[in-house]
Image (cartoon, rainbow, N blue to C red; front, side, top):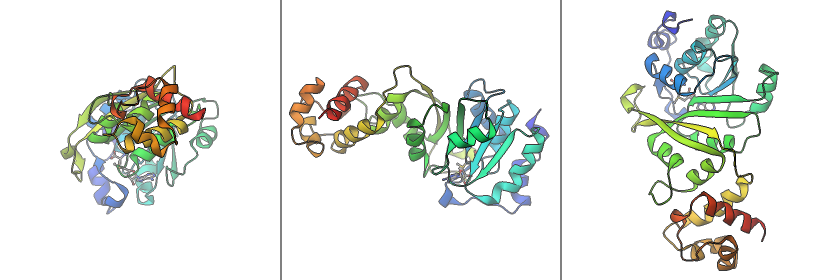
Length: 280
Ligand code: SAM
């Protein structure tokens, strides 16, 4: 099947009198060359379950169906787009399931059990609404075994924070949390002019694949990174005072220098700190 045979997305938007609602972070990709590139970045998803958040007019949805996502479960908050999405179900031979609602509240495990009862995991592929991109990522990092690989578009600056390494300005909580569960790689950037309407900044695709040695207690890691990076320029012995009354003892138990700063501490250090804090 070839998505070129479908009516042009721009014509569809015009025919239905639809415009972008900035409050919902709506910046559309109407060029199939770009949405096909994102679908390719997701790897081999033919015949596999995929969840897409925020299909909007359906540019990425078309590309995901074209490469064979089966089923494709899309979660869209804005009901105005349903008439554009519904015809894609027939076009794809019934592979598309449309869920109208807020993805932050969605129960993906239940959706997967409902629409793909024999599948253990679903990939997530999405051009995320920028205003809820980070909370959605954190929700999925904490998710159960249903969650497979993620191929996600963020504002470029957020993407850089997800893949950042210690000792860089972009390194912070998001990098530690994301890399505690996943290998994170920036795939490619997409200029602002590629979107309708164009946002203020460029975007980038990040691919997140599960790591074998995923750290189990993300809640503990959230607590220690909040304290450590809350005052990122301070030495840890000062920054961690909000976490516990004796930060120096905690740091010693974790094998970390009390004079170190958060941005110098890598995965192993933060894992040791979270373990030591949990044991307090
Ligand atoms: N996938 C489309 C594309 O690439 O052209 C649209 C992407 S647009 C950046 C983000 C989409 O997410 C919009 O369609 C918006 O309505 C939807 N959205 C915003 N907040 C949402 C939420 N909390 N849950 C589900 N969808 C949401």
